[in-house]
Amino acid sequence: MWVTGAAIVLSLITVFVNRWDFPYKLWLAGFTALLNLGAIVGGLAFVVSIVNPRKYEKAAEKVLKEEKPELQLSGEAASSAEFFERFRHLERLIREYLQARNLYVPSKGAPRMSFSFRQMIEALLQNERIDSEFFRELMEINKYRNLVFHGHVDSADRRMVERVIAAASRIDQLE
Image (cartoon, rainbow, N blue to C red; front, side, top):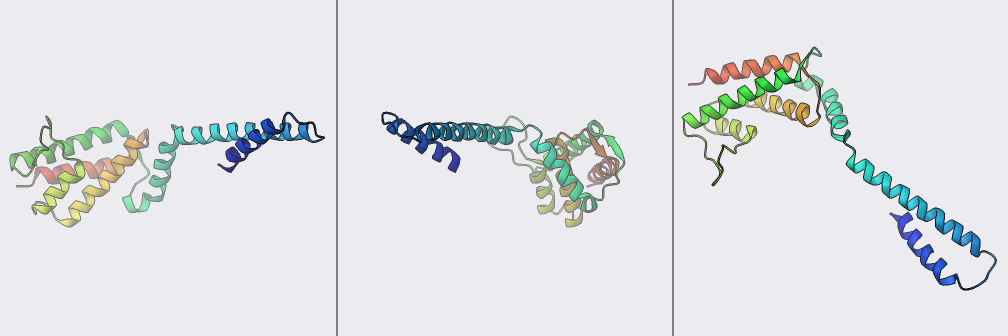
């Protein structure tokens, strides 16, 4: 940021003193040109770092590594497509459960149900359909789903697929 400001100030000074003849005029112009070039390169590097498409993938991979013990990951790979298919099934079961028991209140004007997964499981917890332990399990599954989805991770963890299947089975057994 300061490079850009300095480049602007030096450019203005160079333009102002251009009509005078003094011994360091060429050095001032050269230094100003280098500073302007540095500001341009720095600006481009800044933009590229912000727009970097792999930024979220790298962040998701890092978080997955850090949270491996907490999420109880096995390290055994499974297809991310299978994980998402199972997760969508779980999500659909919860949505249908809420609809059938009139526990879901859609947003006004929303053609489809607009509850997020988190809102749906919070509705289950608030209506005492699930306990806090199962709620935490569903939150961990949702957290993992977000990391895999937004991080564009190619493979899921086999243990998480099994946890989603088990969670769907528990939702199926709710009265």
